[in-house]
Image 1 (cartoon, rainbow, N blue to C red):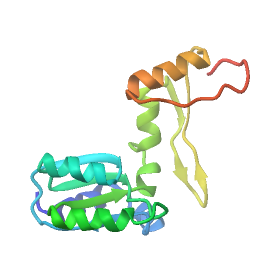
Image 2 (tube, rainbow, N blue to C red):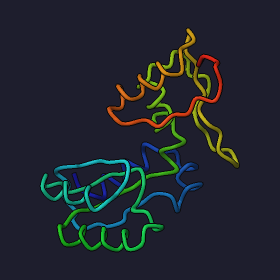
Image 3 (spheres, rainbow, N blue to C red):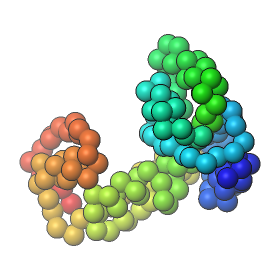
Image 4 (tube, rainbow, N blue to C red):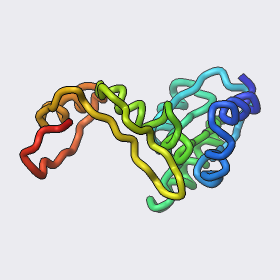
Length: 165
């Protein structure tokens, strides 16, 4: 795929209004090449992700977050390595949070929410997605389900004795 076709597909997938609202919350960090044969993805851009992409011969890394500016020197080092390894990078944060197939909805589907009552939206402020289970669950069972489905450690704090609906 040509990188301009990739960019065009972003404009087709996401409504124009959403891209305009978050015009500074997505884009290319680096475009080192025009031909994309292999894509890698991650939640965050990091040196480790770039090194894994280099080994895997990835042409384009797509992430939810750009390299974080608050970690001194991280973004600069990421850009340096992306250029050195001829890897392009595209990130899409805000628009992906507020589209029907985005982060919140994907998580609700992954943990088997029975009813999605509202998708995440942005209307002058952030409105979270809301879903519910048909049957109540123990908090610990929900946390265990998250760990299993995401294959990731989960930090959770139980603040009451109620079950989760």
